[in-house]
Length: 211
Image (cartoon, rainbow, N blue to C red; front, side):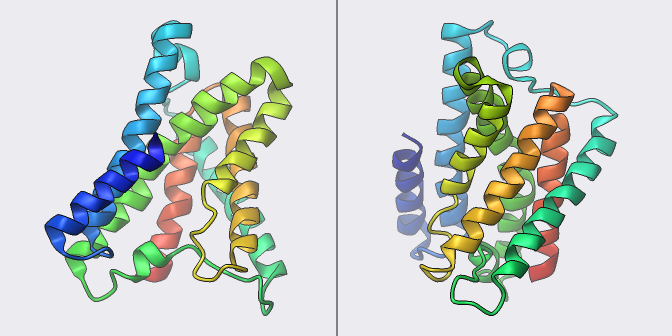
């Protein structure tokens, strides 16, 4: 469903802007994906849970999550850098910053895409992967198993984002590492707030590196 809505949004964006690489197309494509993520979490919560994103998934934030988020962001950046560095200079090295780099020279587009990456993605992806998926998987695979499995799915969701086919290996492994850090952050705090802060800071670093 997410891919369908994302594809539909992107198609509308191409029709409206005339470009598959415009910020408007990116925004509409991501909006479709986020709608599917949010809708799935809400539907499952209402049908099988307590009809509360806070109580079912820990979708809330507290003041202390700023500190926990900063620590988690540092850990995520470290493990991702270790993975990326281990593939440096090989054919498996890659990056997934094309969404940002294709907007260089277009100030308005770069602002829109930066907001998508640094604000929108952290909220909806944390709700879906660390909230909905982790808690759903936990019932069958246990708390640790759920963390690692959602990290695998989070990594696979980034498959195809690298600028080269072989480069996907480093991107997927880096995202798997970050997903595990964010998963344990949610597990240890019992909330998604720290993970959202960490995810935001992690992506903000990517934005700054391109700007």
